[in-house]
Image (tube, rainbow, N blue to C red; front, side, top):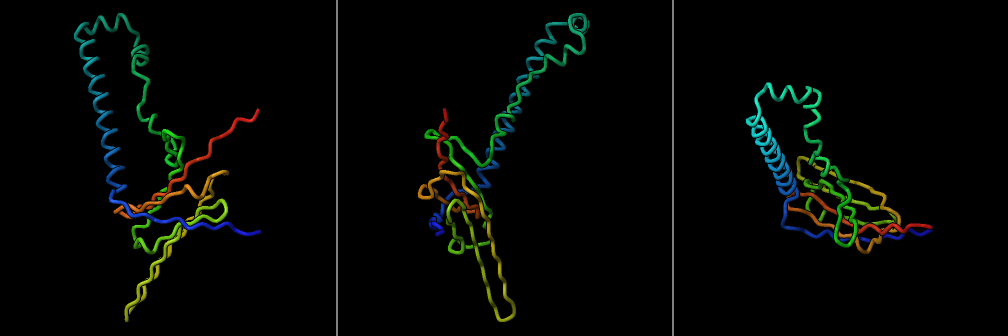
Length: 172
């Protein structure tokens, strides 16, 4: 049984993954704060239109809890971090922290249906030797085309490997 091995080029990029992730979190936080402020304004307007006694006459305390909105915008963001929706289908996205390695020390390849990420650093001086090695293995979904896999290395040392996922066919 022969192994099908394919090396995947690691392309350097000019973006910072960490900066982008924090920006996304900041935007979600700001959106949630706007939503809370809108809800507070709505409650203020509702409260100003009625006296406290009127509110208690018309609503039982347990009913007041049910008025609270049930929509939670954070649930929208609980999608798998490994899969992103693209206009032409779903893409598997894997990220690896290889910040301690130079780009030329990082290799990405597939062997059969496995994705292998390897990085190796060796530094020798007259007084010491530093040796670091990084290995990660990921089993690719069945039907993934290794020729379509891409990898990029961000300025902050995050390796992103992306592979279009095969369309699932419905068996009848």
